[in-house]
Amino acid sequence: MTLQTPQPPPSALRAVLGALDSETALRQPAAAALRHPTGPLLPAHPLAVHVLDGPHPELPAARRTGWRFLIKDGPEVAAAAEVVQSAEGHTFSHFTAGPYLSSTVRALREAWQLAQGSRSRRQPRLLTFPGQYATALWLHSPDAGPSADLLIPLAPAPLGVTAHRAYPAAELLPLLVRAPLAGPPPLLLGSS
Picture (cartoon, rainbow, N blue to C red):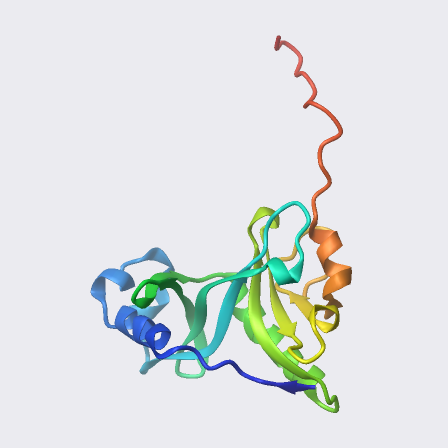
């Protein structure tokens, strides 16, 4: 498989660079690691962000909402910056921190390892499932269609899903669909 790193639109990169120069943006709690850098802060590994929700999610229904860049302070990833699509192109949304940073780096490494020795072409994307509190690296296959797409769930992953395992999309998506409740919630003792 060949991994084709996406090229973000110039307006997305400008929005991230503007946020890195903005004292207001750097006051966000998730930007704490960016306030006293040891070197220049550089946006790296841009990934198009797609959101998939609804009771029966299918990849063709995923909508692109913007881009996420990992922000490097020297060799280390210190935070991520997300930009959203706007009428003017792209606008900075927020910084993020936490376990998804190192998990994203790990998933990208795993994707590169999968790419060795395969002839399929894949495009890495970030896929979020807001209703399930899950995020995955989506290895989209533009030549073969959604049936050939792979998903690598990031840690922490929901119960029943193994983080950093490459799943065929058709196998993982049903695991993320929540079963509806069988009936009304039970009455608690002392309530009426």
